[in-house]
Every structure is written in structure tokens, then in C-alpha cells.
Image (cartoon, rainbow, N blue to C red; front, side, top):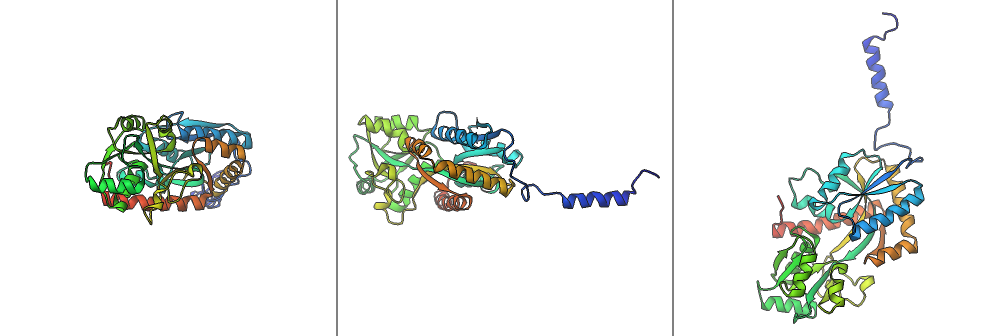
Length: 330
């Protein structure tokens, strides 16, 4: 028996070690973070606004941390592929996700059977930028303002159409909200992306399009379309001459796409705080603010708690529309 622990003693020692060991996500020293490359997931293909902003942010983080921050594009399934990948990786801060509010506030509500739920599986770290949507009509449209649009839609029930880049897109949610609040009923025409929708708008196949400003800017500059309003409650700082929907519809909740950084649930708070502080410092730089503005985003930093609160507000507003209209992708 010499040289061997009795089983009961060995079990007690192992149990004690387990109790003393720090639990992941509760206590971890972040002083050395990061000590290796960090991956930044983007749920879209390369070249879009989210990808460009993620790469700009990653470059600044790499300088600050003196470590590589690698952008990893994982598009598809309305962001589900990227979120699922993040949720399956270690919650250690070495895999981040840069994405929009839609992955948090829309996807879990229209995909009830989805195997992930961003609201439960992700932790919001920092909001980076915000952009409104615009209500755009072809240049041939008789409508020149939101009051005129409401009057025209009421005078032509079921005959006015609005396009969006997807059946469960933020754009569609804004359109359905507008119909409910304005007391009209327009026909929704979903597209797979904005390009074809914009082409159909210019050609007069649809009467109205909800889009991010950059996607319809070429049409507006060419005189083929015009923006009636932005979907925020107040005017957008980068488009001060464009009215907001909230100026006509009182109590309008406002719809905008805002983007930020997320980590997997269980990531140590010390590491989350370090990422948040780094993003805050980067966003204070005029150069980075200019990069955001060039892509049509206002520089609006929110820390982890405030970012989550903003997402929850968005989640609640979307939930009402999903329930009233009966939107589902299952």
C-alpha cells in the first residue's frame, strides 16, 4: 500500500482542487490579454459597410494591443453562422464578433427553432456606430414627403408597395411599423439584398424602398430617386436636410442599424472590460470618427451595459411588430 493514496483521501484532494480552481467567466487576470492573435468574426461578405468598419476597428485594436486582430468573414443565414461559431468557441476573448443589432433583436424572434439565441449566447461589449434607414421613392413618384406618402397610401389601399432586402430584415420591420403607426397598408416586396431592390425602385417596379443611405445614394445623385425621410425619431446628424419619420408620426420609436462588438457568454468580465476600454479609446480618435462618417455612420459609443439596454429596447420594438404581423422564418 506504500506510495498510494487511499481512494477517499484522493477524492477529497481532487474535490478541494476543483473548489479552489477559478471558474471560467468569473475570475481571470486580464493583465496579459491579449497575448496572441484575436479573431474578429463578421457575419457578412467582404466589402460591405460592416466588413469595412470591422477591418478599420481591428487595425486600431492591433496597434493598441500589439497583437494581430484577424477579420474572419462568416456570412450566411442572417448572421447565424457567425454567431453559432462564436458560441462554440472558448469564451476567452480571443474570438470577437462585429455585427449589427439585427442578429440580437430580430433573428431570435423570427427563428424560434434556431439552435442559438444571440440574446442569451452573446454579451454586448461596445456599440460603435449608427446609421438610419431611408424611405426612398423613384423620381417619377408623385410623393414628396411623409404626409404625402400617408395620404397617397390611404387613397390607394393595397396598391402601394415597399421593398426591403429580406423578409425578416430591419428594413421590413421599419416598413411594417410605419404601416401600423400611419394607419395604412402597403404591400411588402422582399428581395435577397438591396441591389435588385434598388434597380426595381429606379425602374418603377416598386413604389418605395427602405434602405441604408449608401445603397441608394448613386440613384439619388443620378436623379433617379429621392429620399423622403430617415427612419430615426429625430434628424440624423449626417443628413440634416432630410426630415425624420418622427417629425410626422408622433411616438415613432425610430429604426436604425447600429453595429458593435460582442463576445461569447462566459467571457471573463475583466477581459470584456479591457475590450470595451480599447474600443472607447479608438472611437475618441477623430480619424476613426471620419472613417465612420465616410460610410454613413455616426460615431455613437456605448459601453457594455448601455449597449445591452439599447439592444433590449430594439428587441422589444421588433417583438411587437413580429407578433402583430406574424413574421416567422421557421
